[in-house]
Image 1 (cartoon, helix red, strand yellow):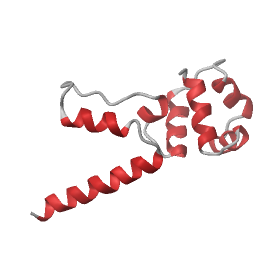
Image 2: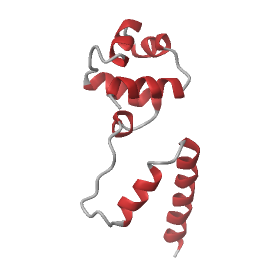
Image 3: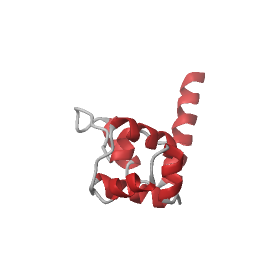
Length: 107
């Protein structure tokens, strides 16, 4: 998926309109439209502000997946599973991992 398509998909999933994003980022709606249609590319500053607005990392925003050198590492396996989950699944996974980490800290 191209970056503009991805940004449009995320915006729609978050139930924002182009004009809402434009206002929040202090740019014109045309800028958002041009990016989503692939007419222009956003600069890194705009991408960072979008990531903040959507409460996600830049990697998540642009669809970059976490890479670990060791293909069989537990971290890689966990990240591969998490990357397939929806927001609710990711939140549940986070809660579970947080509980495990708390448990480890108590021993």
